[in-house]
Structure formats: C-alpha cells, structure tokens
Amino acid sequence: MNLQDSYNQAWLFAAGAHAGQTLTASTLPYAVHLAMVANEVMAADREAPVERLAETVQIALLHDVLEDTAVPFEELQTRFGEFVADGARHLSKVLNGQKLPLDTYLQRLATGAPQYAIVKLCDRITNLQPPPSTWARSKIADYHVESQRILDALGHVHGPSAERLRAKIDNYRRYF
Ligand SMILES: [Mn+2]
Image 1 (tube, helix red, strand yellow):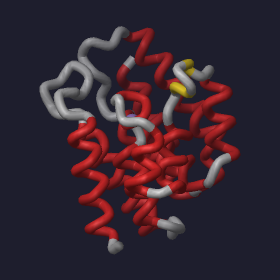
Image 2 (tube, helix red, strand yellow):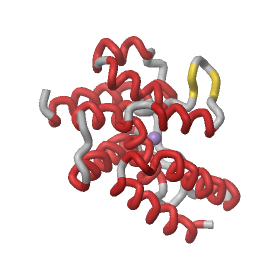
Image 3 (tube, helix red, strand yellow):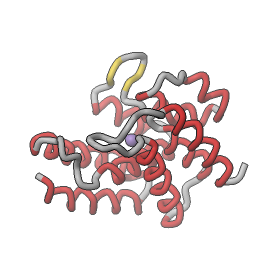
Image 4 (spheres, helix red, strand yellow):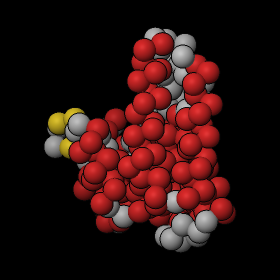
C-alpha cells in the first residue's frame, strides 16, 4: 500500500476511535494532534530516511488509540499488522491496565524498534507548542523536565528529530 492510502486507512480509523475527544482546553477534535504527529514523522523522513515509513506514519496516527480508546490490541493487529500494533502498544503509557512509571516507559521505547522512539520524539515535538491555558506554571515546568528526559532517552534514534526537539525544549522555557 502506498503512503497516501495507508495514511488514510489509519487516519479514518483513529479519527473514529477518538471521536468525541478534544484537545486539552480546546474544542478541536483530538485527531488534530494525531495528524500533527504524522506530519512530523513525514518531515523527519525527509531530513534522514525512516525505514518502513508508511507503517511508522500509521503508528503516529494510532499512537494514542490503546491508551485513550476502547480499541483492543488484537484489532490493531488484524487491521494494521504486528509492527504497527506493537508500535501503538509501546507508545501507550498504560500497559495491562497499569500506568507505567516514566523510566519504565522510556526504557521500553529505547529497546523497541527505533521507529517507535521516533514517533515519541515527534509526539513530544508536537506537544511543545504553547501549553493549554488551564495548565499551572508548575505543571508546565514539570512537562519541560519530562521532555528533556524523553530527549535524553530516545534522541539517539534520529538526529534531526532530536535536534528539533532540543530546540522546542529550549523555546518552552518562555512558558513558565
Ligand atoms: Mn500523543
């Protein structure tokens, strides 16, 4: 399947799965975030090629489905295959009903396929836009620290994305 068709297949599925959810403190659909992460992955590939790009873009679009919707892992396996389903599982902070500590979560990502870590870098790049109006300064400062930990743990997988995240982290200081 080409990139456009695989994108649309995952985009339609993810938009349906997240239907009714919105971005934090916003009326925009949650799926807006997913498209931004997929956009980052495609731009990252132009800076330094990402192997299995079409599937990696699907992982970007599906990266919050297991964490935030009722869609089961098995359905992702059936529809999108093992590599994509396993990517969504690696990117979920909830595993077997338990929220993973950040260290454990990042360790799992660091030892999984590099594409999974690239999606996480792209996810955090996307999330370092101006923070939601409802966030306290302390929460924004904590998010800044957490972002640096993500960069430290996963930055080695894709140089240009690491550089881009580093710049976003620097810029984020202005918000707290
Ligand atoms: Mn996300």
